[in-house]
Length: 84
Length: 212
Image (tube, rainbow over all chains, first blue to last red; front, side, top):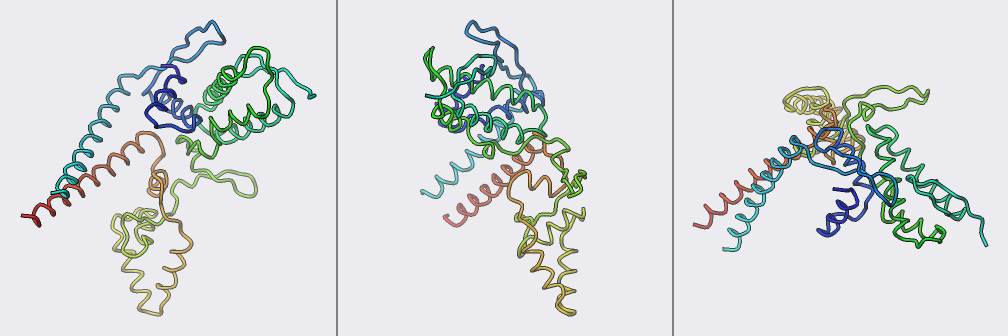
């Protein structure tokens, strides 16, 4: 995905207000091997970075999703216990 | 009427009012100094400049000039450097400049540990700093010094005031002398979530036994 698309999606999900936080994070993730990018030519200007997730990135992402789901299940079951 | 200058921003040509140029220049320089010590500094600056150029292009029709207003819009959209967050774990994260201008590595930093406190987390912070596994030793020392002359009590109060409380994940990592990189942060977050999950399990179990 292009960084501008990433920003668009985050904004749609209401998860980003300030764009500048994204770029150092993308660079850090790339330097840690979780993301990678290609250069894609553009007719309307200089070439743009196109980011992809790496396999290592995918496994970390899956772990994080698991952790989040366990947490959210715990919270939800506690809430439903309280409501009884 | 204003003077304008021509600039190359992110590989694209722009015509910009001189006052807008100076404002933008200052903004870019402040971002630069924020990230100067980070890994991937050039990448970050390239991306940010590129994004600013994209925003300005989208904002303006073909033959218009970049005004101060447009630069303000860019600054609001991109954010201020202070909002960009802590930089990645260079070992530079742990260096401090002495007045003489030479850098030295501090490695660990002394914090109070709010997650393991009896009173104010002074003893656990100190144990983390000195690498002692159980804060009870430091706590006993404080108590002994307090009982024999009151010095312990006074030093505790001084430390309570002078030593900052660990708040962010990087604080906790620095408290234990661990490098601040994405692995450690991910691990810290995971451990935190596991702790939270355990506490919630305990809580829900407690509620269940009380209800039935």
